Length: 443
Image (cartoon, rainbow, N blue to C red; front, side, top):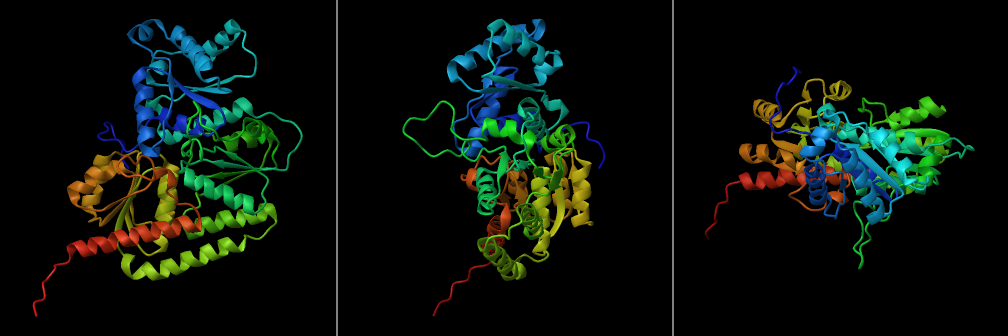
């Protein structure tokens, strides 16, 4: 597609948003932004609305003075306050547009701060460059995962473990499903990141300042000693955590699509069987059979329905595969992240579709009207198009502000696919009911 020189109603979020998702997936880690107070407030509220959980993000609170004279003092004071108030084991410092534009040397400031404070190694400070003008939340997420591994992974004795890197943004429910699948195969694994509890914590009487859960720090350190790395998500263009482990520690690295739909979940299951040398438990064979049965049941309702799918690249790729498997017609496929790898992968699934990447909702709206779309599937940010064109929108992915349950929405695996197929079908049936003319029978 041609390059956009202006963005109207963007279909992506900023890089620091993805950084928070990655950092919150690590045990006892506090995310912090080097930038204005508004950046952390905006993203904190954005994530709180989506996950329905309290979210803390520290800020160096750069002001006009800091923008002119530099934010060194702000960042140092912010780090002191975080250590005093939260006592984390890791502080993840993500830069914002302002800090990057004025040329802040964040690694240098952190090094200077450690020397001035005489800090021991019990607190790790991880800087990551995430200006929004350079990429999307997806890229911020993956670059942060790589920075975490770069900072922590250290070679020691081989551990015969599998590194499972979730290289695409999923829900806490998705992570729980993947963990359960690995555990039932007795797979000795390290999962990165794990925000299944930190973004979906149970209600307790006295909430801790920092939520329990996350990938144990010692596990991240041990990733350099694993026998294999499996990354979920094939659309990432930037150097990934799995790629870094392969290049630095010679750990074999395999990338698979997110296990959404029948074929992609089969690929994941077969890979796990190959790694563990064990057959998939009967529970998942039954789930697979129920998914096939569901696909047969709904085909007469969903076949040839024109659908638009938009959102994060790997999620959109997986959902496009799933809706194609049940006979739908995905006529518009879109992501706000500029990603030729994504476009090519989608083209291999559905060559005749209109594929947009690096687009905004103005572009998506135009193509939805041009193709007579009957159903939309993506984040809640597409609701303006849904309301204007009177097209149902099934909310999937981040962000989801106007419905509850985003943290518990399962789309991966056979079970997740069956649930999504049910939702799609029931939405179409409800639409059919609304369009029927009700006549009163008088006897």
